[in-house]
Every structure is written in structure tokens, then in C-alpha cells.
Amino acid sequence: MRSSQDKVKEQKDKEEDKEKLKEKKEKLKDKLVTIYKNIESVKNFV
Image 1 (cartoon, rainbow, N blue to C red):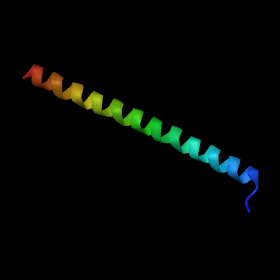
Image 2 (image 1 turned 90 degrees about the vertical axis):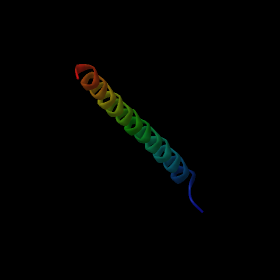
Image 3 (image 1 turned 60 degrees about the vertical axis):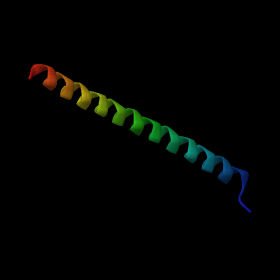
Image 4 (image 1 turned 180 degrees about the horizontal axis):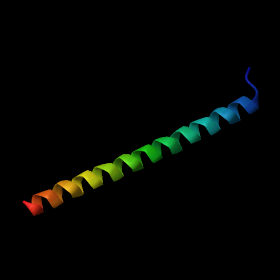
């Protein structure tokens, strides 16, 4: 049997992983948006 402390720790770890994933997704999104904007500005420039 695992103690309730272990279970609580596991839950916290899961939550942290979710947060990290969220942050990664946000950063990726920002990069994509930036790339897209750059492509658009190049198109407009040509």
C-alpha cells in the first residue's frame, strides 16, 4: 500500500506536468505565429 502522501505527491507531479505541457504549447504557438507573420510580411514585400 502506498501512503496518502505518495498519492498527493503523484497528483502534484501530474499537475506540474500539465502546466509544463501547457507552457510548451503556448511557446510553440507563439513561434508559429511569429513564423507565419514573417512569411506574410515577406509575401507583402515581394
